Length: 306
Image 1 (cartoon, one colour):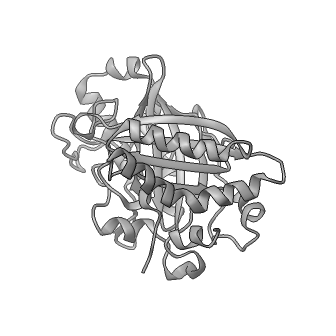
Image 2 (cartoon, one colour):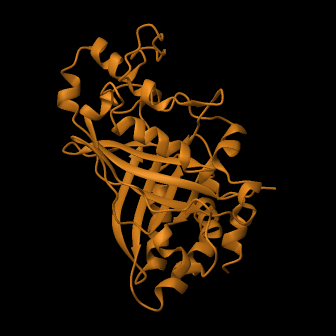
């Protein structure tokens, strides 16, 4: 039976909290991180009980650069650093991050309480790169006004999409995860007529219906990220959420998968122009400012660290 960390396949979060961290260079950093990782599921359950918030869940992931330092083991077969991409003004940068902590629940205060407990225990072992607090909006809409994640797998399908199985038995129940923080230029976007926005997304704005193939532009977001191989659509499990302040805001993108390949193929089709110069039209209004890859091991792996 596959035993993933709780945040990977859970549904229905209203608020998310994302911490990216780098490991400091001292002898105690590795043992501290292993100790905190082993304790994270129990700590999450304790905070959830104390606050009366049963939806509180968490996951911790580790980057390729620190895997051998932390665990001294063979690593997941497809774990590699995030690969930066660029084509003209469109960038998908790779930024420093050794650890990811992903927390979500129906309450912002519960997320904050758990994150603070975790960071207290990690003190002296890590440096904080970025802390992002995400929130769900009306009808699951991104800040651009369109429903986000319409095609996200639901129910039992999430585990089938997100979790490593027998293909890498030593790491079964784990998941590859990629994160990017996008900053939206909402002023420019909101100057577009609704019909132009719909053409950029590939769906209607009011009722979230996919445009027909006869009218959908080849540069529409959906046209770029919906990829079929051998008659089957590539899938990822997304926990992406809007974030930000009035001065800087956008989407925190996070995608889990049994393999990192589907996400990377989608990102390449977004960034890189095809033979006709088509790219993802949304990237004319939103830019990625971070990018990092991790592996989130199974609960059994964490238990082995205790």
